[in-house]
Length: 154
Image (cartoon, rainbow, N blue to C red):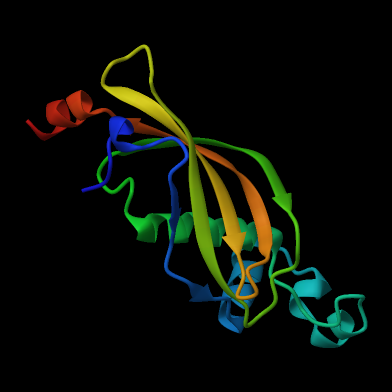
């Protein structure tokens, strides 16, 4: 079971397990999203670019963040809804073969006017194998309070 709003501690930092970004990830994301920009799909084109090789889509990085967050289990059975993403920035490219992990820092965890729920804001940093932050932003999640979870499980 995941955490309730009251269980999050402002300033707490956690890291996810790592995962490697694969060719399959990039090809599949191109197909699903419809984004076939040659920086993602054409090795010859990307090889002539300033980056010298293909890169993963920026929004694929964001999707990986949500998956790594899920692997951390903090909201298993306690999340109600994702509320938004603020201040997201793409700081460095993600290359095929990079291994990334998620570092989260709790910015706030507050009960709303409805005592069964609250909002948790987390600074999310996608970090590569060189310890470079490649993406960063704030994700807000609505989750149950302990009282709200008790109501749901009874």
